[in-house]
Amino acid sequence: MEKNSLIRTEAFVNGQWVKAASSKTFEVTNPATGEVLAQVTDMDRADVQQAIDAAHKAWPSYRDTTAKERANLLRKWFNLMLEHKQELAELMTLECGKVLQESLGEVEYGASFIEWFAEEAKRAYGDVIPAYSKDRRLVVIKQSVGVAAAITPWNFPLAMITRKVGPALAAGSTVVVKPPSETPLTALAISYLAQKAGFPPGVYNTITSSNSSEIGKELCENTKVRKLSFTGSTPVGKILMTQSASTLKKLSLELGGNAPFIVFDDADLDAAVKGAILSKFRNNGQTCVCVNRVLVQESVYDAFVEKFTQAVADLKVGNGLQKDVQVGPLINKKGLEKVQQHVQDAVEKGATVTTGGKHLEGLFYQPTVLANASPEMLIAREEVFGPVAPVFKFSTEQEAIEMANDTDYGLASYFYSKDVARCWRVSEALEYGMVGINEGMISTEVAPFGGIKESGFGREGSKYGLDYFMEIKYMCFGGIE
Ligand code: SIN
Image (cartoon, rainbow, N blue to C red; front, side):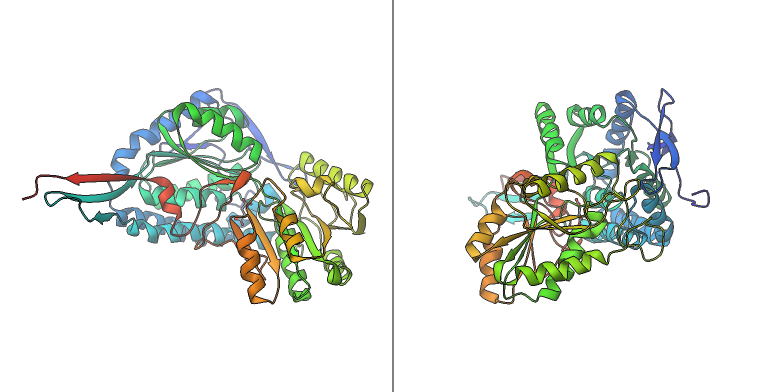
C-alpha cells in the first residue's frame, strides 16, 4: 500500500483534493484480511452540493470544447490508466478482494471504455431531415445533457465508473462520481489520473461518503444534475427513480439480474462447463451478469453435473494477491450471510451439495454446486451474488425458455447448443437485454450492456452509449427563398 503512488484519501472537487467540512473520515478495509487500508473523506450533503456547483460552473466551457479536444483528453487518461495498470489492479484487489488476474483484466476492460468513447466523441452525428415545405430546412443536432452524476458499485471499482463517465465526458458533460464506500480508493486513483490527463477544474469530480442514501438523494433532487447513471441493486434503483421524479432527471439504471445458463442436450458439455465456470465464478459470483441458475436438459443432466462439480471443486480459493488463486473473499458479512442463507434454504428444500457448501474462514466461502435445484428455492428467485451454482433440470426447449423467463429480471442470459435454428429461436425468445450463445463471457466496450424488466433501462458502451448523455435538438430554418 505505502508504495502505491496512486493512493489518495481526499475527495476530488473542482480540481482540488478536499476534506469534508466536518473533517470526518470512514474506514476502507481489505475483505481478504480485515485489515484497515485507509481513512477516506466522509462528505455530507452540503459538501456534495459544492461538487455539483463546481461541475455546473465548469459545464459551459467544457461543453463548448471541440469533440477532438475532448477525445485527446480521454486518450491521455486512457494511456495513464494503462501505464499504471499494475498499481490500479493491486489497489482494486486490496479493497474489493477480486483476484489480481481479474483486477488486471478490469483495468484493461475499464480503460477500454475511455478509448472507445474518445473515438465516439467525434461521431456524435446529427441529421438533415427532408423538409415539408420549400422555404424550410430541418436539422437535428445532439448536445451534451449537462452535469452527469454516476453512482457506482464495489464489484467493478474501475470499469463501472469509466463505462459511465467515458460517454459523459465525450459528449461534453461534466461529471460527479460517487463510488461506493467499500472501494473509493480505485475511484480516487483514477481521479488523480484524470487530473494528470489535464481535465479542467470542475469537469471531473469524485465525492466520497459513507452515507450513500443521503448523497444519492442530493444527486437525485439537485436541479443542476441533469442525468444520473446508476449501477447497483434493483431496490436501490427504484428508490433513486422515485427520488428523481421531482426533477424529472434523465436516468440510466443498470440493476440486478437472475441470469439463466441453459445447457441443451446437443451442447458441447466441456465447452458449457468452461463457460459456466467463467460466468458463475468471475469475481466470486459477484457480478450482475453472473450465472444465477444453471438449467440442464434431463438426458445430459448427470453428465453435466459430474463434470461441473469436478471443475468447481478444482477452483483455488484465497487472498486475491496470491499467485494462482481463482476465487477471492466475499465483499462483506452481509454478502456472506446471504450465500449461507441461500445454501441452507436450498438444502432444506431438497438440493444436494455436490461440492462446497461450507464457510471457510473470514469472508471466504467454498465454491458450491447444488444439484436437484427447484423453483421454490430462494436462489431460483433472488440473485445470490456469491460462489453458488444451483442446477435445475428441464425436459423440452419450451420448458427451458419458460423457466429462464420466469423472473422479474432481464439482464444477461446464456445457453449452449450446436443447433443453429435452435440458437436463433432461443435467443429471440429469451426476455433479456443480453444473450450469450455458446459463450459465458459477453462484456465488452463495443457492445451494448443493459437490461430489461426490473434489471433497469439504458445501455452502456457501444455506439448506443453516447446517446444516453446527449439531448436531441431540432432546428427549423424558415424563410429560405
Ligand atoms: C456488473 O456486474 O454490473 C457489470 C458486469 C460486467 O461489466 O461484465
